[in-house]
Amino acid sequence: MPPRWTLDPDRLFSAEPSQRAAARELYALVRDLPIVSPHGHVDPALLADPSARFGSPADLFVLPDHYVCRLLHSRGVPMEDLGIATRDGSPHERDHRRIWQRFADHFYVFRSTPSGLWLSDVLISVFGVTERLDGNTAQRIYDHLAERLERPEFSPRALYERFNIRVLCTTDGAADSLEHHRRLRSEGRLDVRPTFRPDAVVHPGTPGFRDHIERLGAAAGIEITTYADYIRALEERRATFKALGATATDHGAVTPHAERLGAAEAERIFSHALRGEAGANDAARFSAHMLMEMARMSVEDGLVMQLHAGSLRNHHGALLARFGPDRGADIPVATEWTRNLRPLLEAYGDDPRFQLLLFTLDESTYGRELAPLAGYYPAVLLGPPWWFFDSPNGMVRFLDQVTETAGLYNTAGFTDDTRAFCSIPARHDVWRRVSSNWLAGLVVTGRLDAEEAAELAPECAVGLAERAYRLGAGDRST
Image (cartoon, rainbow, N blue to C red):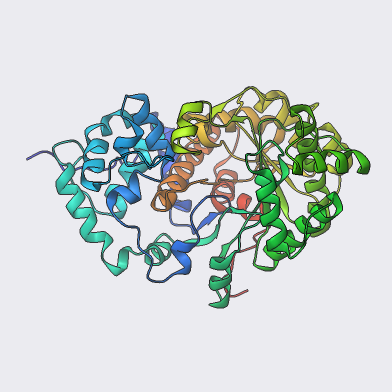
């Protein structure tokens, strides 16, 4: 009999005995704290409908997870074979057992990756899998998972309670109906909250920009024919999100360039964009202007502004054409913050009503730009290591590079940023282990005393994120 598949209880802790002992003590303080998940991509329909289920093991672990699909694709596994539907309707694998078998056959490629940590933790801790996943065990484990996924205690709502999630924020398009959030609100559920994501309607280069603007207008109840109509529609939608519990907005951009346009220039570019006639330079200037406008609106309505910069989306045009976006072909690019963001921070960086969380995919900017910006401007907080760097090593690099200049209290805690609902506790556990071990390193080298580290550990786990996103205690009754 092969040995039972288990997780090392000291994973991610230092091998040095005194640091490991300190890390164990700090981790014990935070291991069972409630989870605050202030930024992610879980479908709110999973929680709004009490009868919702995850589907098959392939539905849960493979099809929605671009971390999984991109790495398997890198090893020559076609997207079609993973069950990813094609835009043109050409054949793709529909047998979920076969999809699972391919995933299991290649599970070894996740060794040493954060995805490997999360997947193993979910399989073992959430679903009670005792055999290591590989090609030989694939079908037995599939049957085990399928049986559990049919049980009421493995429904999304039941697991939400089991995971001890205090607050979960979704990410929703500006024109989204928010019907699922309305349903949750009608039940008195205030712990699942929307987040306003306007990317499709603020970047004129977005495919189908006019259609997105029409949907925005319909959602806001405003016919958008002018730039002024457009601004009113955005403000109305933000108010609707806020009324349903939103505390934040989210903005994705290749570059954080901010630039204020005059009213006439904004009207001119917007009119051209509606006709599909805005050139690349005008489109970029309009996007930069809308960063300024989103900051201005946040000052007025109090929504925390998140800015995720530095991802070149859909690097492989053939993949985009065949399968659509969000399939794993987004690649980081170098990013400049200091000059690009200066107009926005000159205008709002000292305003006590404004809070701006910055996320980057360019780690070289941590110590050179982001930490100094957060270490000066009261409005700026640093989001945690994101996407490609949401990993044990990435977390340590982040903490090492930003805290000496910005301090921990100018960071925004942890966000799991996941579409894979069942990985939420695993991702938070990685952060809690890494941050506990990092604090333990400060203790054994005399930079913190044990009492200070014990105060900081819960801050890293929950408190910083609660305050950064103005979630308070996340009490469901309030």
